Image 1 (cartoon, rainbow, N blue to C red):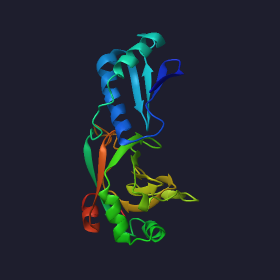
Image 2 (spheres, helix red, strand yellow; image 1 turned 60 degrees about the vertical axis):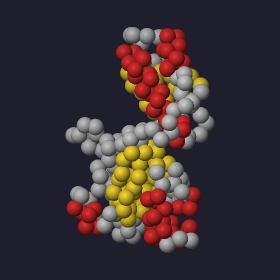
Image 3 (cartoon, rainbow, N blue to C red; image 1 turned 30 degrees about the vertical axis):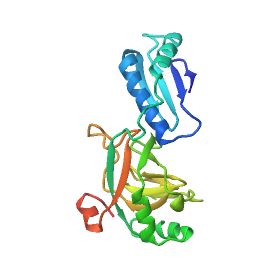
Length: 225
C-alpha cells in the first residue's frame, strides 16, 4: 500500500496493482476509517479500482499531519470481509430487441443466446468505480466465456438503461449517450436521479446481481423501448 501526493491538498492511496473483490473491500473499509477518524479534515474521498483519492482541507491540516493520520487509518485492513457491501439486484430485459449485440457475443463464444443470458445472471459483480457519467458503475468481473471487446466504432446513441459488456466489465448506462460497449439488454432501474437521495441505487463496494424480467415486466417498471 502506497501513499503519494496527488496535489496541493490531496493524496492518492494505492492499495494494489490490480483490482479484486478483496481490494475493493479494503478500500471501503479505509473510507469508513478515514471518515470516522479524520472527518473534520476531509473534503472528499474518491474511491476507484485499486486506489483512493483523499482531498483534505488545508485550512484545517497539512500534508505531514494528514499522511500520519492516513497511515493510522489504513492499519489492519488485511482481514476485511470481501463480501462486504450492499447486495443490489437489478432487473434486466434480455433480448435481441433490447440487446442488439447478444447474438454477436453468443456466436463468438459458441453459446446460445439463452446461455449468454444465464451466464451474465449467475455472476455477482462488484462496483469497482463510478465515472464516465453520473451513475455509470463499472462492475466486474464478467465470466471469461462472455467477455467481449469494445466496439471498433462506438454508437452515437446508446439508450438509457442499456446493460452492456466491455472486456470483463459490465455496466448499465444511466442516460442516453454515445458508447462503445456491447449491448445485451435493458434495465428499467434509474441509475442516477438528482431528485432522489441517494441519487444512485449503488455505491462503490456494493455487490450487484442481475435478474431477468419479461418485456411486459420491463415496461411495467418504467422501462422504455
